[in-house]
Length: 359
Ligand SMILES: NC(=O)c1ccc[n+]([C@@H]2O[C@H](COP(=O)([O-])OP(=O)(O)OC[C@H]3O[C@@H](n4cnc5c(N)ncnc54)[C@H](OP(=O)(O)O)[C@@H]3O)[C@@H](O)[C@H]2O)c1
Image (cartoon, rainbow, N blue to C red; front, side, top):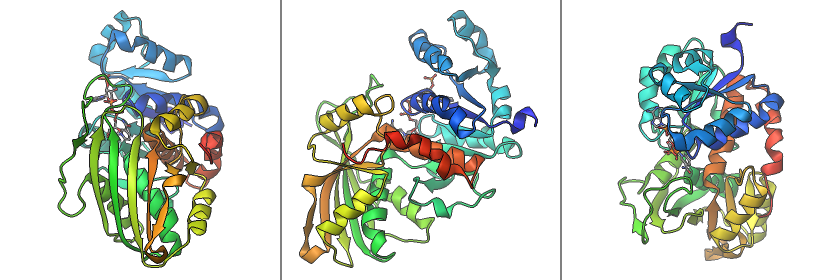
């Protein structure tokens, strides 16, 4: 086996998504057949030194661009590879850079690695990067060897998608008359020091058909399964740093009962249920019991908020989004699928302890 055939995974970016993903992959690498976890840090910053050193202590290997290698060393950090070397070593590359960079990296770097790597994964906002994905929702849309560019959709799109998949499509592919969602987003990530909002701030309905990108992305996600769903979303940012909250309104063609709804929610291991009514209580549970504070569920459904009206044909309620947890789960699922399409589900069992049925 040559170096390039080792199961090396390279994560680019050490921000809100990259940092926990690097740590989690390093923690489970032995159990899931990953030989090395490489990570790319762009900027040599003194304030980031403890984070980088902690990830190195957990077993991940730092790579940086050659011109800034001396600056990293001068700050007491020890890169093991240049970016060029890491790109060649990696079998899977997970791009966790801000919006727009992933697509640029695809055309500038990834396309030229097509022969050596099993695949490339981007996050949330990278529309047009690759096939959209939520673990457990559209896995059957993926073709080994063919699908090499994967876009793990945003955290709120995960939430929309799992609700539709579990509560609507279980009763038929044509069961959704209309799905409407209001995404109430936290002001900024707790790892960010900028962009906080002082009061509720609405997001324009930039998309004529879908409202915001959440419904648009969910539409494209379900299109990978041959479905054309009628979806609309709105978004507002709230002056909270805890969790996103989503209000949903699902109009069904086939009436259901609340008992069936709850049973379906209980049966999906990637859905957590809660009787808690506020995001700080749910967030606090994650901080104490999740992986480094993160819940990996796709959604946390607020049970007391569920309301079934119009003869069982209209389901409304609230749920909370484990924002930087659900995309971690799908990113790891996509990585393991690219490396081992036949065995990835079994390997993912290592994350079971972080799937809570009740929060
Ligand atoms: N935040 C969430 O809850 C969330 C949830 C789901 C999906 N997403 C998506 O995940 C992606 C990353 O978001 P994030 O919140 O993790 O971003 P972030 O916290 O701003 O972190 C971005 C990271 O990318 C690095 N970076 C920036 N430009 C780069 C470039 N040109 N080349 C290489 N590295 C670069 C930065 O490195 P330096 O600091 O070293 O310069 C930083 O480590 C976005 O597409 C976002 O939409 C985010």
